[in-house]
Amino acid sequence: MGVLTGIMTGLTGGLQLYSGVKGLFSDKQKEARRALANARAAEQAWFRRNYYGDYLNNSIARAAIKRVENTLSRNSRQNRAYAAVSGATPEVAIANNAQGLSAMDNMMTNLAAQESTRREAVDAQQLQNMNNLSNRQASLDMNRNTGLDPEIIGGLSLIEKAIAGANWGREEDDEDKNNSQTTDSNANV
Image (cartoon, rainbow, N blue to C red; front, side, top):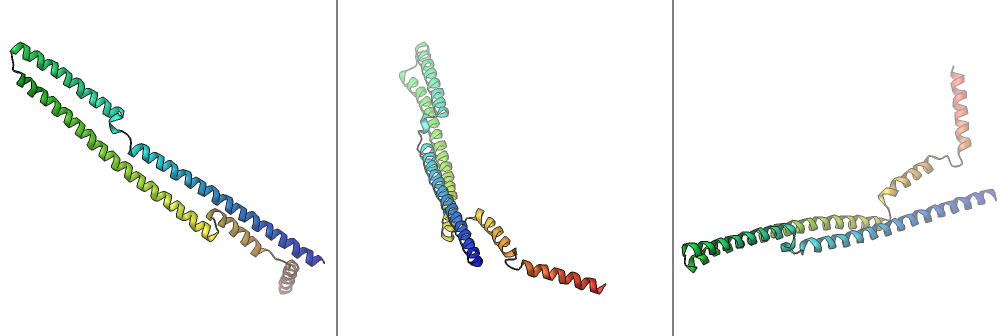
C-alpha cells in the first residue's frame, strides 16, 4: 500500500509539473504573439506616417519656401523701382523676374530630391524592421513547433540534472558502500 501511495504521489506531482510548464509555455507564447502583433502594427503606423507625409508641409521646407518667396517679392519690388527710375522696358523687368522664378524652381527641385532621399531611407529602415519582425516570428514559430521556449529549457535542464542525480531508492546502498569503503581503508592501514 505504501509503494502504491508513493507511485501515485509521484504521478500526481509529475502531472502538476507538466500542466504548470504547459501553461507557462502557452501563456508566454500568447504574450509573444500579442507583442509581435503590436510591434507589426506600430511599424506599419510609423511607415505610413513617415513615408506618405507631406514633404512640403514640414518646418524646413516651409522655411525654405518662405525665404525664396520673400526674396522674390523683394527682388520684384526692386526691379519695378529700377524700371520706373531708369525707364527700362517691361521686358527687362520680366527677364529679371524670370531669374527669381528659376531660383524658386531650383529650390523646389532640391526639396523634391531631399524628399526622395528621405523616402528611400524610410523604406530601407522599414525593410530592416520588417526583417527583424519576421525573424522574431520565425523564432516564435520554431519555439511553438518544438514546444520549448529557450528561457525555460535551462530550467528544465536543471530539473533533469537534479532528478538524474537523486538516489531514488538507493540511499541505503550508498550508505553501505561508504561504510564498506571506510572499513576497507581502515583494514589497509
